[in-house]
Length: 184
Image (cartoon, rainbow, N blue to C red; front, side, top):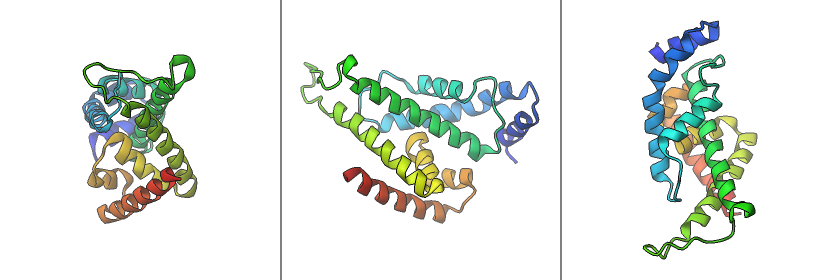
């Protein structure tokens, strides 16, 4: 049993010092996952991976962590928190009162119009993911762990307690399903 799982069990039992022990253990892993996610985003972000981790940590309860059933439960919640943060940032950038619909022109890179399309893509993927979650919550959770947290197939399989081949099949299905839904 991993050290993270042991601390999550302590949190579940209500031990007051356990939440303080959790962040140092998961921080670097969450930071690497956030950095990987941010690197895959082509939209210009003012949010840095460290800030994404901190915002996600606060949404998860900060030092007042709720009872996590296991590592999968914790990282699934972290993935969902990161997803929601990125979606909210995209919506704010597109909001009319914040200049949504207007294009910024960068003198050094005139072809800068991809940012709006990326925000639209983030929102379209989010809506499609919500529809997938209604049909198949496990596959939606896998997508969140892969797309928003940046876990590998093997890491997702371990976190979800499924085999790597099953995770790969689910990922293949979910990507095809989401691609079809986003194109609609």
